[in-house]
Length: 457
Image (tube, rainbow, N blue to C red; front, side, top):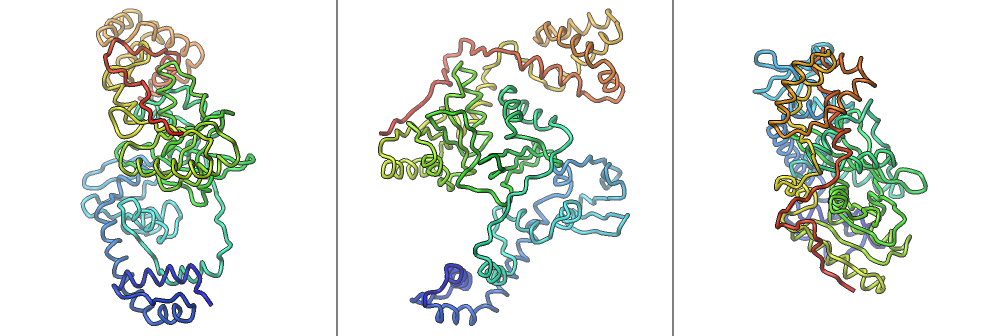
């Protein structure tokens, strides 16, 4: 009798881990004897590797960065940090350790995440290891045996709980990623984007009105984080249906929304394509699943302009030629950068803007907030002085009408923000203003929005 796939997989792991030869047969009795003979040695070796991985995690990933990513408010007090939401916590930055005096729990970054995410440590280690490109395998043989008993068990996709608002993801996606605010709002309204309780972007895809795929992207620009929710159906990917006969394929939802933003900037109808994001370049099965479900005329491949992207494109193209010979394949590449979001940011760095677009940097927000305060207090002298400053910074005077409109509708909220030092109100004003801007490509010689294509039949 032939050995199971799981037995062969584990036998291969043993052979590779211990640098020994694999039996030249796949007979179950032979493979089983091989596993039994070397299991203890492999477990000891894996334990040694796992210990090294844990040390790497504890030295490379800082608790303060993780705490901020989880949405906690950090405050420095002498040599340590505290957390506003859990005031009994103290974080020793130099030793990268924490203690929670309310219950006595303490430890490393692994213990911190386990404590505040209520998550098993082995799961935490596995996730953190993947972030620094290490392969953590907790008790490999035991996990193999458990999976063999439950081979038909399919993980259920459970979406992260929603946060109270969307302000972090809107700020991150529009200000750090330069995505078109209308497209961000559209994804929210389609229930394909929301903010979770840890302030992450959650990109969701559905089939038969049930969620089948969800990926996460952190909003902390200093601690980059992304990953997929356990239980994702990679044969579906992140799919946005615009009832089109054309499918556009990218590696990530942000790449897809970046391409859509670029199309809108060049006055093209971004609803012309259905959108599909693969969550990388290796999960190409989603392309063919959607081709089976819907007879597309053309597939546009907009993966990254690197070797992995080229290999992904070639794989998809070859398979489509073989299985769907009447479908046209188009390779759509960036012109200056590796991916579509970098391309979008590059264009903004070169002066491409929505017409009269206001860049919400700290200085601009501070000046605009001063004028808004003056308008709220009917202090016309100060308002005129700040208005002059706005002109010096090239901020269009039309913003004042948006301030007045906001104050008329949300006066108490604005006053509360002014008193608390929050800039939420002026940020909302700028966001509303920018949402109504048209695109001005200027007179640049770089027509970067022109599609670079390689057409295949």
